[in-house]
Length: 377
Image (cartoon, rainbow, N blue to C red; front, side, top):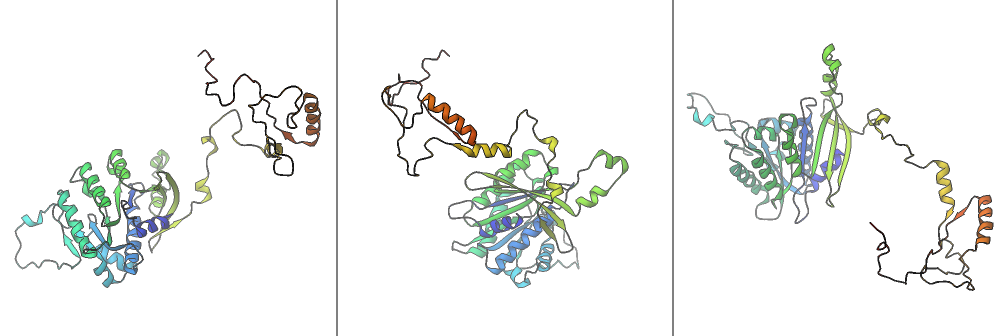
């Protein structure tokens, strides 16, 4: 399932469609969302460097970590340093998000940190329009005047929501997704820091919502005993739920498990013990929801009307419209005496048949009259 998300980000969008958008949600109970974000970021950067992605470059909006952190991360993931400088542009919104450092007088004999060519500073995250323009300007270095596209990643939308409103942030993400130069976009949000309407709004502009849920829930028993086993398990293992919106409007729900090791995040299929459905959750009804084996056998023995046609017998279908006189003989209309004999024979053989006999000749063929007009409702 994680591989399908990576393929979706890699393949990008079709001509005339909006770019695929991925929302990654986590919470304090399962704080592994940043590792999931780093996993997809490194995969996409590697695919861009290899030339297998639709995007020809990556613009990273760094709000939660410094640019040097992501540069080191990509190098540890095996992306060549020269390719990182060439195909990755970082918009630094972490160092001075509100522009306060510009108001401080410069100190004497203090050397400013050197900046990399692929890192640009942004000093007012409250200006959403300027932030949008900065992202697109960085992407122009990849696409030029052609129809090539670039990808966008926002490491933590929650930090952006601290300084601006939800409609502004949702509008920013939606404008990026609908831009014809964007191949794909994905972001991370700490869902427990916001109201439910925030997650709902971001899910609305997303094509894929990946939710990281704790593998073990915190209970009152754990609190009373001060048992931190749940914290240990949730810090290295989690459930990974994905809600995927398809082009035809259908929504597909998938689930996996993710594990943390020294290399990074590993995804695996849900184990049987975690996929077990509690029988107490099934609806309690007074009838069976499924057929038994004997009922399936009996159903298979029933011969449907006109099922014999095509095996050498004459094809004569009584359509229920023409009336048959008493002296007319229809080979497919079973007489009562014959019916009783056949019923006994069928009972002995275990086979059944369905016969259709019209109950009334009052209605004319192809009549437009509503058959329920005579009902007193």
